[in-house]
Length: 194
Image (cartoon, rainbow, N blue to C red):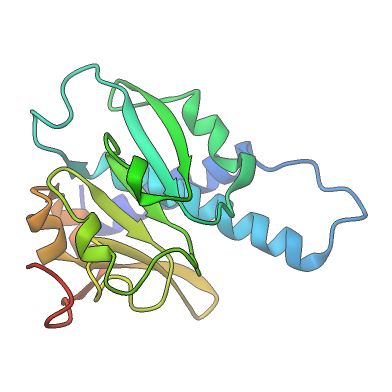
């Protein structure tokens, strides 16, 4: 499958997921709330697709084991992620967990660090990095600070950055198609353990 066909397929799957999770929008909703909801519906679809193109170590994510998708900090997704919990990812059930403290993050396979999370100190990200944990976020510079994937907005479109060193440090294998579609970035010196 060519990169173009893969991108077209990714867009169709993303759009289908977004449309299937759209809440009923009443007349009292503000334009900003509607835009924010759409933004996080698209980001939820990206999360689902990232999981399909990343391989975890076999001893970290065993066959039929529940996939733990964790949200750290402010949860802008709200109920948008709930349909994912009713689906399976790579033939595994999915559990959505939400945290405001890093003390309970054990067992997470994908950790989404919410934008503007007040509880995340600049030096905390390297402490979170561990084998088998895909760290994803949507804050400026997060990939350079050690997240494997960071969702960014460019030209009013959501795109993503990839920090290959962070993914390797976590012993995660990213599909070549995912690497071709993302913007590759490097870790800032002295901010990450890798």
